[in-house]
Each structure stands twice: as structure tokens, then as C-alpha cells.
Length: 392
Image (cartoon, rainbow, N blue to C red; front, side, top):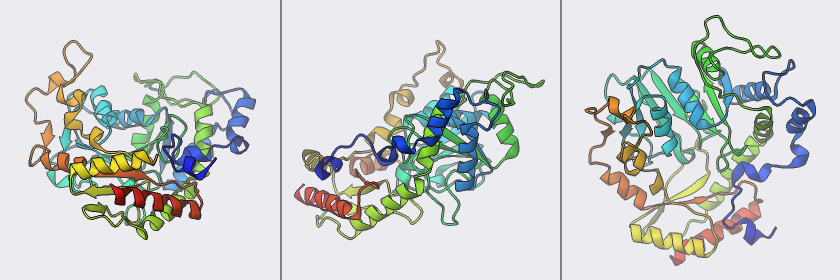
């Protein structure tokens, strides 16, 4: 593959570039075993091995593998034993799956405006709030609100990120969720992880995720005497095996991103009206985030990069106040559930109706970094980005 091709609009970002058949030892073993349901085998499942490895790597007391991060969010919410119609404070800038997880749990999302880094402005959360989901967007470590008993960290885009105290994102709140979707740090196409340090919460989560009972490996199905209804959120051995292979390369991916980011910081574009947003030491450097002086300059930069086949994206699609699900209170239920449970509740917390946030998003541009490239290739990639942006 030529360098130009590797630096172009790649559809296999980050961990996908480390998928390799000779490295798929766990997947081969699972297939040769002939059992792809984790609770059907009397030996230790690949999913259990994955959970143990993740717990050790992230410093999490308990880990549960599920189908995707949206399910992990719902599972975390349900484990707090809410009442239908309870509110959950979520950032106004994040993927719609966060709002969807809240709504599909029978709860009401309250949008909280963001700060200049596009992280939730925790100063807007009212006293007495019970539940909040904080999204660590674009690998940026977001602050957690104080005084909220159930803080769920959405670390879908921040696997490997750390707080200043050294703890990993996802491990400081009540629970943390991670995604292995195709364009995340690591990938299994789909796949999610849920972590918590609360033993009681863990027991609730692992029961609810498999029809309300804690399974005994090799003796499926068995039922707890105190079983309650749940769902089938159990991952498969095949997906867990790919995640395990990916986890083997996490440090390699993170160090490659750090190196590419450092090279970019030493060769910034000389272009007025274009600033590179700073990254904290613990952030996962999945992209360069530029703040332009105007929407027109942002659009010109997008055009210049795209014409040179350099991958880039904008963030306007993450503004939840403008999403049909939220703006139109969309629901498949005939009575509008669960929106109908909160007709008079304030569903947004912003000082200016999100005007400042819209302006920030209109002027923000992201360019991905490539951990799999050699140092020399990364330097060439940075040069290409610089030349494109200086020509915009």
C-alpha cells in the first residue's frame, strides 16, 4: 500500500489497522472449541478472560462485556434502580446513542451545555441531581460533576485516557462504558464493555444482562430463585476474542497516537485564524482539533483537506438540541413514552440557548492521527495536513 493511500480517507482507523490473522489466537481457539456462547463452556470463556484483562489494565474492580456501548449505558442506568421518568443529565454535544440509552430505559434526558473543550459544563448541573452521563469526547478527559451519586462515564472515544491522578476514564464514576465500534480506539466492529468498582452494582448488572439471573458456566440455563426480568445483552465468544486481540495492541496504539501528536505540535500550520486546541497529558490523541476564526474558514479547510484525500470531520452532527429525537421528542410509542412523562420539566440547561456551542461547533475541525504509521510516515502526514491548511 502506498503512503498516499495510507494517508488518505481511510475507513480502517486506529485499532482496525492492527487486525491480523496470525495474531487471532483467541478467535481460532474459540472456533476450534466449537462453543461461541460464553456460558455454554465449562472452561474459562474468552469473554471472562477479556473482562479480567481489561480490569487489570484499567484498574477496574468489575468488568462486563456486552454487545455495544449503548447497551452498556442502558445497563448502567437500569442498575441504579430508577423510577420511570427520572431525569438523567447528559452533555448537549455527544452521539445520539447517549440520549437513546436514556430514553430506552424509560428515563428523560436533560441536555447540559458544554465548555470550550466541548465537555459537559458541570457548573450547570443543579443541586440534588441524581444521575449524569459524562462523555469523554474525542479522547478528551472531561471533568466529573461533584455531588451526583450516579455518574456514568461514557468513554466510548477515550479508551486508555487517564485523569490527572492516574486513574483511567470510566473508573472514577459509578460506572464506565467503552465502545469497540468500527471507528473507536480499538474495534471488533461492534462490542462494548461496562466497568464498575461497586460490587452490588456489578451483581445487578450481570444478572440483568442475562435475563435476570447470574449464570453458572457449563450449566446453562439456570435461574436464580430471586430472578427478575432482564434482557439478553450477553456478548459472544467470537466478538470477545477479537476484542482480546485488540487489547493486546492498546499500548501500541496509544503510543503511536502520542508520537503523531507530538510531531504535529512541532510542525503547526502557519495560518492566521486557525488554532490547534490543546490536549491534556492524559487525553487519547485520536485527532488534531482545530478552532477556526469563522465558519467560512472551517469550510475552506475541509475542502482543502478533502481535495487532497486527507481524512477530516466536523462535529455539528453531535449537537443533540438539533437532533430529531430530542428536538421533536420522537418516540415509537403511541403515547410518546417516555417523553410524555415529562411535559413540564426543563429538558435543557444552557445560559444562551446553545448559541455559543453552535458557534464553537461551526468553527471546529478534526483531523485523525494514525498510530500505525512509522515516525517518518507520520511526519509526512503532518506536512501534508499543514500544507493543505495553509492553502485554505
